[in-house]
Image (cartoon, rainbow over all chains, first blue to last red; front, side, top):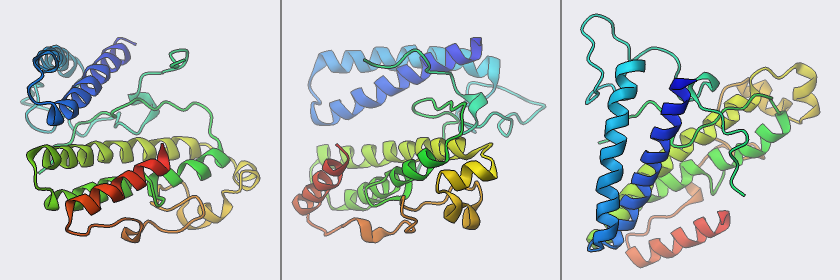
Length: 94
Length: 140
């Protein structure tokens, strides 16, 4: 459950970062958006570090998860498995 | 190049399989205006873009569409998993199933395999951007 909550929060932050990045591509001098982007990236990276330390790497390289003995990258769950994903039941947008 | 991240852009957790829904949802995976079409459209058209804004936008939305394709593939897979023979037949999924089983194959809801014929790349940025609006407008 803790894993799902962390992952959902990370998904939210990364989703926001992608959208802010797209916005900045066409509005590159809007400092409010640049600040929001930087803050989002920092918050996401902090959370990513915690998540990877606890549950293994999200990236096969450039990952925060340091592992010298067991190659965890291959491990389940992969993103298309139901067990990998937080439930959005009851969290629908209205 | 691209770096894979081992998570979906948006979570998919389907607890009840649904053959008819799988048959419909696959349109957005491998149909004319599906996510593979969008990703390949933008990936191909980005080379013709002339302004930094347009180059960055086409590159980045192409990348995001790859993530959307992964979401749609996941939806289709999870909708099929656990279907019984009767549910497959009742949901009209038997023609798909006889060829692909519960594998995820890029095709339209009508079973037409994904094709680059679904999009354009004309070497002219304005022409391509109009084509993009037509394609995305089909979804919106």
